[in-house]
Length: 172
Image 1 (cartoon, rainbow, N blue to C red):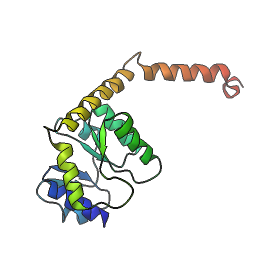
Image 2: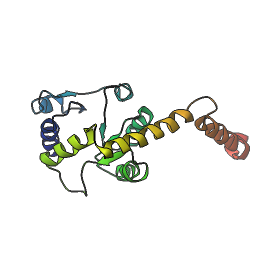
Image 3: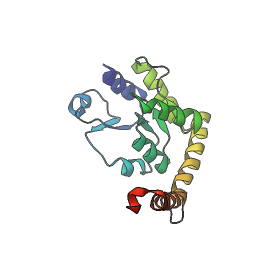
């Protein structure tokens, strides 16, 4: 039921989209309009890095969040279970790099989805511009962390040093 509302809402929004839906593609292809494409799999990072991507509807799994942040793509959050709720909160409230699709935990209707997607993708929206600005800042932080000598490399070196110096596992 919810998948049908999402498909109808995306179509009704008039915004072009790519939807990766494992195992659901044939059913969903019947429901979307000319604006959308449904596939069973894609190289998510490669898609997110493409210049035509204006936003990412995500369930807020940690890998998807990291890939979106690294790619500099703002997120529409649609958490489903467990840690995804916390990730959504961080995306929307703490980092300000996204917006929630729905308020609360109840179902959502196609009209609401269409409205949220249109507003989220409106290039003249002050909210979108603010979110894009925040997203670019976080992207810079992510990219700086993975260069040689960046914080990721330094953190790994410190971790290994601590493990070697303080662990009986490595001293046996």
